[in-house]
Image (tube, rainbow, N blue to C red; front, top):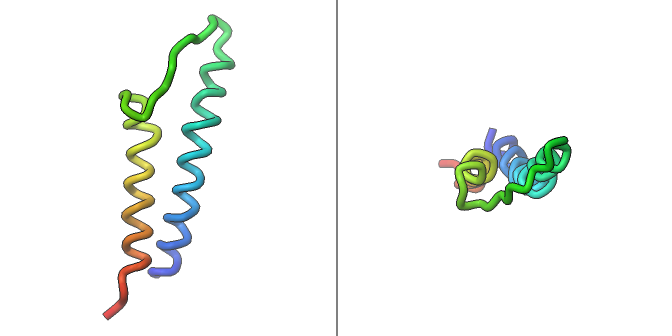
Length: 69
């Protein structure tokens, strides 16, 4: 179980960075009205699309690394 959580956490960290740095910006670029919005990790979009999954990933990695008793 811990090994699965560790793998899930590591994959989620990678996926979070790919999602926020590529897919979120791609969605804005595909807007036909000319989206000129910038997305930072300190905005509401950053909270929803970056920090929430990153904190879940960190929790999964911490759970996976914790020694079993």
